[in-house]
Image (tube, rainbow, N blue to C red; front, top):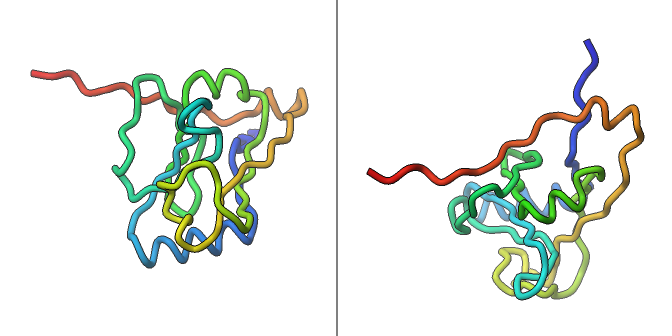
Length: 132
């Protein structure tokens, strides 16, 4: 049986910052919006600190932290691997937990090969619970 190809990974630098933020804030989550006002940089929140929208897509987890992206952005980048990285400086989104540390999460993209595309792990789509 072939193993699934992951859609998400992180650099050592990003893993170190995530571990540091987890110690400070507890459980975390990531969200990457499709642009405009939210920008396209991944944002880091305390788990539950960002409200997901219907059909947003979870492409994986890093150190137990779910990584969600806007469903339209997923359609655009569904054939690419996301590598979470970090850089010095302030990004477009000042609400992300790494901002006070003078850091910004970013994503490096790499297109999957045809072989990798046939082995991609499944994604999870968010749907709001029914009321009543």
